[in-house]
Length: 110
Length: 114
Image (cartoon, rainbow over all chains, first blue to last red; front, top):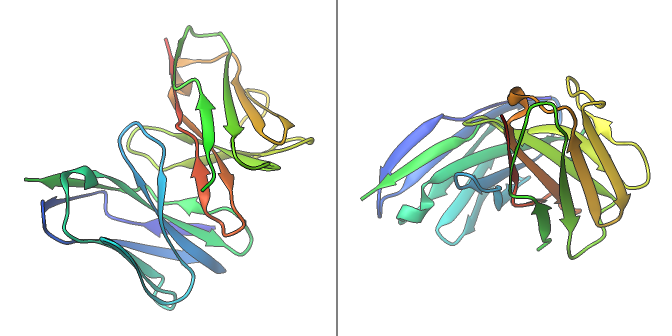
């Protein structure tokens, strides 16, 4: 199984940059996912990392370091609509679906 | 991407009654679907894996007699919460999975048991 840790809550200003960290412990890493979840809605896929490095997709980027058991999600040019919970999920070799962290609630204020 | 439809979005029921939630894969045949439960400000917790044509696989601590799962076709899985109690009130979400591992979620069903 995995032990996934991410901050409970973060706040940031509209237009700024925010980095949401995720650390994990697993016996056999096989991919890390980031999902966005607005209140009362289902999660939507943001990114997938399986190799070390940075994956950029528009305003969102995700970084992975397998040796450190560490990932971050970087959100640039923050918008009010980015206020949501961001879930880090890690997949083991032993399982074909990921385990989710508790999520980081991001509040973007004007 | 895959489209998953879940129904109903909201349901309120009396304690002791049963509630059925449907999950449909609209654009591909899903031999496997997943059911999650999420309490407020908590993570998504996998409840069970629904397998088309065979019994569901339940996670440790999930009562299979209470949470009945039926995967009768390649596009439909149902979760029935039997004899619901207030502690079963939660957000139930189903998902399908692509070969890449990406999960596609339904809209979720918020159950409130009075």
